[in-house]
Structures are given as structure tokens and as C-alpha cells.
Length: 562
Image (cartoon, rainbow, N blue to C red; front, side, top):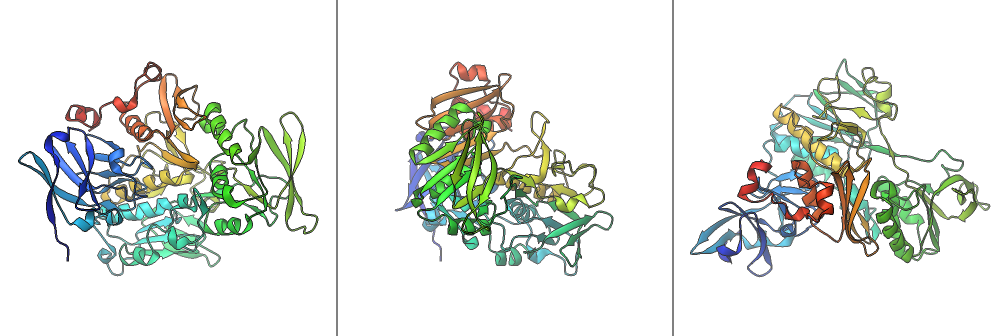
């Protein structure tokens, strides 16, 4: 049985308005104190995603605390989830000032890092679904967008049935964790946001794994599934079908040891193939490719060759200077780059024609090189997984030639009633500019799922205004926020060679994106400043303005924040 204790943890004078501090609470316990005006709040001290210390994050005057690592966000007043990728809420504790000391009342066990989270408060559960009601929300897809939509629907009181049609054979997973900095994770149960049994019992989800959707009938409001053409009725439809890894249209692309990486089965195949002494060729030099390289660098491979169209890895997103620093790091680990090159063909092995044996590469100057390969991985982006919509009447005007689905600021498919699209397939208007873009990152999908879940549950539009935040393990953690496409200037603060820097991406003197390594919490602070329209201009950054100095946490800042 739990037993609370009241402990004086800090002098009142040591916590200023707009400040956060982590304090000890009996033995190994830790508590996060946050001061908003004259009110002090006490919560769990660690993010419920990967355990980052929240005191090193960012506090805003409207009560948001943003994790310094991955941008998960919580409400310090309630502990509730504000933004993905937080899978669970924070504990909250009573805090008061007595005789000049801040006293916290808590169950000591709830202040331990191992017990940092509590289940989110659900205004509805599976038990609330009326018996016999068949039509409700149907979600096509089983990724992070689907999971966050489920959680948001129940958090905000949706009491109808929820059906998830997923082609995967497991519950929604934390896809980012497939590629940890030192390993490929191949056990789906270690990656699931919630076990399938919990989704069914607590959330009342009819989770249908291994279900390939073949079409949508807008007239009858039914989703058509598989070879049997089973029809699943819906009241509201959420399209969250994600992406399909691209394969270059070259000879040899489908040989047995040529892989792409998207799900657990892909990770299993690559993990089994990339063993000591093998020769690995990676086609593509951006995020998924280079994360795989990091994960296998210590496997004592005979060679790791990376082929990229750009002069430097990540160049299109991060620019030449950041790309050059990352290239130098990877070269120090034995990786060889074939830059500004294209792949002509993959040649079958002389000993087994079902396997690839080499890759033919041509440089920009016309020089041809043949790379020997035991394993080939293509990391050349994804295409929207929307083949099932191409023959579905009513989608002709909203699915473009790339397969992207056009949605409005509420993520509602344009011109269709009660149909939403989120994640890799959604072409949505960017906050601030209105420019339509498709963002391929599972954390964007998760936050879009949360927004759509709230919209459906509350019956009123929840505009999607979250600034994209993503990250990548590249020796050190690379963090990025914003939408930097089309930037015309890059301002570097620090050393890209030492991988300790902040890079500001500007378009016409406006900062549109920020990247960093070893400079937390600059990126998550920038994500909040971009959201609020308070980001310093490029001119101000060049003149020495530090985004961390911009007040968004005190009482004085509240009118600008709320």
C-alpha cells in the first residue's frame, strides 16, 4: 500500500518565476519543480519516452514542459501528455511553501526513475462502447499515427468503437527504436507502444493485424479488406497507412540480399545478413541509411560503402558544412563514401544468381567503379502507401501523382466528409506559410494522430500547428526542428567537425529550421519559438542573439504565449 511523505526539498527563494529544477526526494527519488508566477508545480522528473531529465528541457508560461531530447511535451499542472512521442503521462505531486521552504508530498516510489510514468487519464475506455454499435472510427494503418490517434480519442472522451486495420503482424511500434545507436532491434514486443492485449481490453480497440486494405467505398462508408473483399463499416475514417520504401528502378534491385528498412521483418533480415566479415553497400546517404551505418559499424564488417548523389551525407537537409562534419565522423569509423554518384546496376553473384554480388557506380565525372557486396541496403526514401486509394472512387482529386493525400489544416481530406489523413501520406499546409508539404517522420505522424483524435472526440476542428521535431543517432544525437526546405542561408554557431554546434536555416532573414549536436536544449526551445512566432530573425542570430535568452516562461511572457 502506498504511503506518502512530505519533505522540504528547496528554499522558496531558489526557484524563480519561469524556472524548473530537479530536486532529490528521499534516497533515489527525483521530482521536477516548475514555477509559473506564484504557483509551484511538482511532477515526475523524467520524460516517459526515453527518460530524459525534464529539468534540462524547456518550460513555457502556459504550463508546457518540453523534453530536451525528442520534443515530447507534458502539462506541468496536470502531468498530461501534450505532444508525442510521450506514450504515458507524468505523476503530479502536491507542492506548497511552508516557512520559506518548498514542501512536496508524494509516494516516494512514484518519484523513482523506474516509476516515472502513469497511464494517461482516459475520459472513455473500451467499456464505454455501446453494445451492438458497429460503426465508429476505422484507422487504416498500424504505425505511431494510429497509436497516438487511439490514445487521443479515448483521452478526449470518444466512446464509439475503434477498429485498426494494419498490414503489420504486431501492434503499433516505436519505429525509431528499430535502429538504436548500437543495434538493430528485431523483437516487436520490445518496440510496441502498448501490447495488443491492452489496446483491446483497456482501449476497446478491434486490432486487426495482417489486414491489407484494398479500397475505400465512400458511398457506403466501408473499407474493403484483403482478397476476401470483407467490408468494414465506418462513421469516421482515418487514413494512416504510412510509406513504402522506394527501390531504385535498376537491374538487380529485387535480388534476395538487397534490402530496404521499414519494419521489424526488414530489421530481422538485415540483422541476420550483416555479420562479421561481410561487405555492406548502402545506397543513399541520408537519415535511414546513416542510422543503419551507425548501428552496424562495430560489427567488424569487411567494408561499409555508402553511395550518395550529394557531395556530403545529409546535404539536402542539413547543408554542406554540417554534412562535411558528419562525413568526417563516419570516415573515422571506416566508412567509405562514393559521393555525387549514381548506381547503374546491381550484378548477380557468380556463385548464386539469386544473390547480388556487386554494385556498379558512376561518379559525376563519369568514372565507373564496381563495389563488391554481400549485403545491399537501399535507403532512398519512401513513397506514400496509397495504392488502395487509386481505384477508390471519390479520391481522384485529392490523391496526387506521387500518392500524397491533400488535407486541410485540420488534417481532413479535402472535399470529403469524416475522412482524415495523417503521417507519411498527408500533404498538409505548414503553419505560418500555408505551403503544402509531406513530412516523412513518425513523430509528425504521432502528433497528427493526437490532433485528429481530439478533433473527432470533441467534434470541433483541432488545427495541426505542431512544428516538426526529429532526431538521428550519428555518434552524437543530431536534433532538428522546423521545415528547412528552400533555405537560402545557414548560420553555424560552434564546430561541425567536433559535432558540437547549432545550425540555423534561414529563408529571407526568417529562421525556418534549426539543427544541433551537443547543444541541448536549443532545438526544442527553437521549436517552441517557431510555434509561437517568437524566433529571432537571421539578422538577430548573426548579431549574437541566443534563442535560449528569449523569455517564454515567466508571467511577463504569458501574453505572448497563451
